[in-house]
Image (cartoon, rainbow, N blue to C red; front, side, top):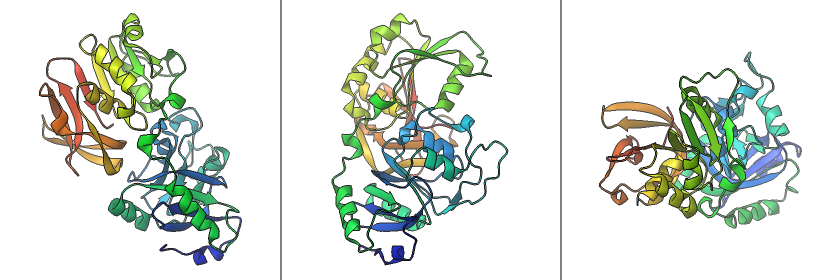
Length: 358
């Protein structure tokens, strides 16, 4: 263990915190959220802004997020920037420094107050740089985040937390879609959004973000459907297009949804994003693999047709293997950091898909 509990002994029992990784590395911190113990996979996010959107994005279900930007919290939290409308499924939040002052006219509460109210365990004064480098070198880690009165001070509990982290299920062994999807078909709308057409978009909800729904609602009517909705039921709604949304986890687990996606191909224009992008690729015969530490935050993407670089927002652990794509599928976007697939289109059918937002 690189960090001993000696550094923690100098902190008050009420605000001590620790992150314990499955490989034995530990990072001390100070509690700035809900006091308790939580578990999940630790990932780092490189976004400079938008911490509230990250915390409330359903795609982060099951994950403990470390923000690489040095300070967060200065703009507080407000209802308009919430991405889910439900209790955030994030398992924990880590940061180098929490701003002690909230300074934004839209803020209705502080970040710390929000984290406490939503019962999210969070630590400040974490060595975020060292943690991020560790994750880049050793890959995503299962972990336990603890704050408050979690340890007697003799270090024995730390070993228990490490062992608990080792026993956690991995993300590819978990399924969060059923807890995030809408229970029944629901027409989605928001005050102030005026659609420019009467077209209908049916969105498969795997944990869709509110900001994406806003974009689609500007184009026309949006109907959210549960993740397990059959292709036949979708077609009876007479949609002008079907979207397979973003969401957490490994789409290769959901062979039931893949089968319904395949039935829709050729019958209606289809668009995929994130989780939905990978799912559509699998339905076309492709395979996925897990990235060492994923793409979370800002990523540069090349649009192959125009040669232009796009700065995109991403959050995913899995990507499509290019050699597994059938010849009728054209790769349209690639990641400029590691060359992975970021988008594709079908040469004959109306199917377009991307792994990002911009």
